[in-house]
Length: 125
Image 1 (tube, rainbow, N blue to C red):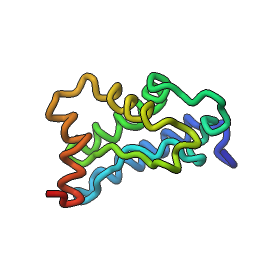
Image 2 (image 1 turned 45 degrees about the vertical axis):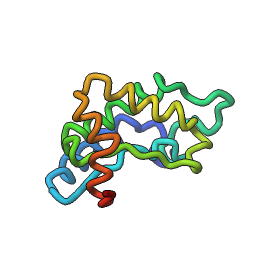
Image 3 (image 1 turned 120 degrees about the horizontal axis):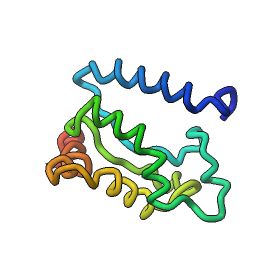
Image 4 (image 1 turned 135 degrees about the vertical axis):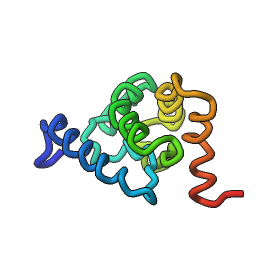
């Protein structure tokens, strides 16, 4: 959107480099979500039918996979930005997309992404 409209590939490469740099900081944890923001540059908020979990997973995969590769599952956690994100997604489709993105992960890795990392970071007993 704005001056970045039509430059998704260039923006992605810049973002990827920034993530690589940020991952060097051992105290940084990444929340994977917020993709329904109008700033994401997708037209989801304008659609009558919101994106399916398959579509969301396909679009989010390069971003989330890169974060997980760089930070590891112990420094990543899934999150939603609801109810704000309701403009762009459905809650069920978003969380199903997260499940689709992690189908190849071990049960322990999935537990970290969906629960354990958040419980540790937010000190939830």
